[in-house]
Structures are given as C-alpha cells and as structure tokens.
Amino acid sequence: MTTRLIDENLFDAVDPPRLAGARCDECGTVVFPRQDSCPKCSGRAMSTHALLVRGLVWSWTLQAFPPKPPYRPPAEGYQPYHVGYVDLGEVLVEARLDVPRAEIRIGLPVRLTMVPAYHDEDGTEVLTFAFRPDREEDR
Image (cartoon, rainbow, N blue to C red):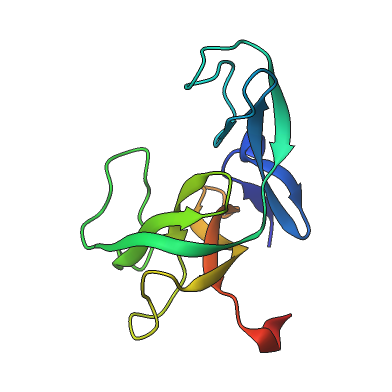
C-alpha cells in the first residue's frame, strides 16, 4: 500500500516520527506548527526546532461529529475519536489522541505516533500524527 504524509511541513522526521516546530531566535518561544514570526515578541527570526516525542495529556475531548472539510471520512464511515492538547514541556500541541476511552485522562503519559487520516481517491493512505499511551513495555 502506498502512503504519504498529510503535510510534510509538520514533520522533522518520520521513522520514528518527530514533529517540527519553530523556536524564536530572540525570546526562545517554541510554536507548533512552524510559523514565520513569534506570537510572543513578534520577532521574525524563527529556527526549525524538533519537538519532544513524549508528553502528557493536558486536556481532551471526544470528537463526536465529523470535522469540517478538508476532513475526509474513511470509507467505512465516520467514527468518533479523542482530540486534545499534549504538553511537550515547551509547547502544547493539539492532536488526535489514539487512546482508548477507558485509559484517557488528564496527565496521561503519551508518545508520538502516526495514524491513518484518510485514503486518497487512488487508494493512497494519508498519514497524520497522533499521540498514544506511553507504556513502559513499548519502550
């Protein structure tokens, strides 16, 4: 099966996955996704900055209805999923949470992973980032 990333600019690496943020050269503020200016000091010097791959669930909710376009539901139809903010220490990242309902909680240790977002018309599987539980046995 052919795969591609939902947006190559979101990633510093893919095997293993690593997100690419930016750090302000003037004040040190870290942002994700990358941007050209600092939201804190308005500095224009931003350097690519690889984010940590482990963090803690800061907040979460259930995405109970399909998002607006450009979201594409899978062929088998929309299935609710968890989304939330993950605290990576220097920045909060909004992400899909690939965590079973029975396990999800604020403060849950999570680790970056890749999950299918949808399939293109030609059958290509489009991958996006998500966070899954960070278990000792997975390390």
